[in-house]
Amino acid sequence: MTVQHATFGVQEPAVAVPEPAAELRNVSKMYVSRGGTAEVLRDFNLTVAPGEFLAVVGPSGSGKSTVLNLLAGLETCDRGVIRCNGKLVAGVNTDIGYLTQHDSLLPWRTVEQNIAIPLEIRGVPAEQRRQRVQAMIANVGLNGFEHHHPRQLSGGMRKRVMIARTLIYDPSTILMDEPFGPLDAQLKLVLQAELLRLWSASRKTVVFVTHDLVEAITLADRVIVLSARPTRVKLEEVITISRPRNVHEARFAPGFEEHYRRLWSAIEIHHGEPLL
Image 1 (tube, helix red, strand yellow):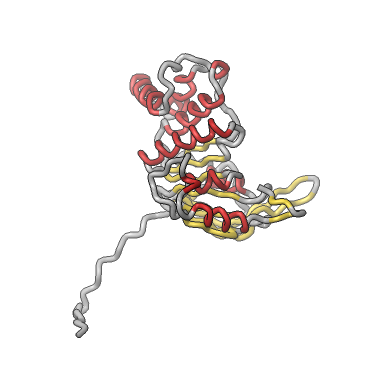
Image 2 (cartoon, one colour):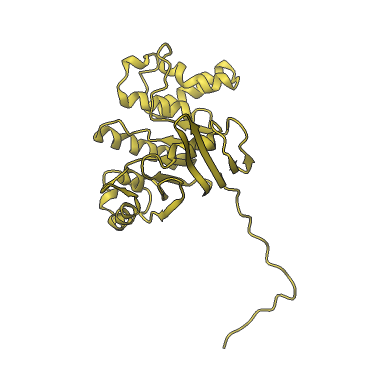
C-alpha cells in the first residue's frame, strides 16, 4: 500500500541556487582588422559553478583566450551579457586572478616583491603585506628564495611565483591560459600536482585553458570542447574520476580512456589533422 502525505497547502522551502561564479550569455565577439573581420563568438553561452574546476579545450583560433579576456574585462563583447559572481563585467574585473602562459614577472623585483604587487595596489599595510607574502611563499614551496630575482629562478620556480602572485589577494575566480604549456613533461606534472593541492585547499573557481587533453581530464571537474569559429560549446564532459587525484595515476583510473575518446572525437578536424 502506498501512503500519500497531504501537505494542506504548506509549500516546501525553496532551495537556494547559488549565483554562477562566471557566466557568458548569448555573447558575440568580432575582431576587425585591415584584412577583414573575424567572428569568433556568436550567441555563445557558458556557466561556471562556484568552486568548479572547468577545463576548456578546442581548435586553435576557437576563442579560448577570448573567453578568458572577456571574463577578465580586458575585452568587451559586441553583444550579450557577462557576469562574475552575479555582477555585470563592465570593465577590468578585479574579482578574478589571471595567470597567463607568458612570464610577466618584473625582473627588477625579488620573489617576495613580485608576489606583493597585488597587495600594494590594494593598499594593504606593509606589515600585513609581509605576513601574507611569507605565508604564500611557504604555501607554494619557495622558502629560501624570497630575495632571488626572476633571472635566478628556474622555469618552474617562476611559475610558482606567478601562481603565488595570483592567489595572494584571494580572488574568487582564477583564469588560467595554458599556464604549463611551455614546460617539460616532468615539471608540468609537478606543477599540476601543486595546483591540485592548492585548489583542493581553497576550492576556488578555476577556468583553465589547455591544449592537453590528458591535463584537462586530470585536473578538471568538467571539460568543454569549443567548436571552430563562430564558436559554440560542442561538448560538455563531466569527469567522473574520483578526488583527490594523483596526477601520475589519473590516466590509469577507470573511465579515463572513455573521457579521452569522447573529447578527442569532438575536436574539430581540419585537413586531416586535429588542431589542438
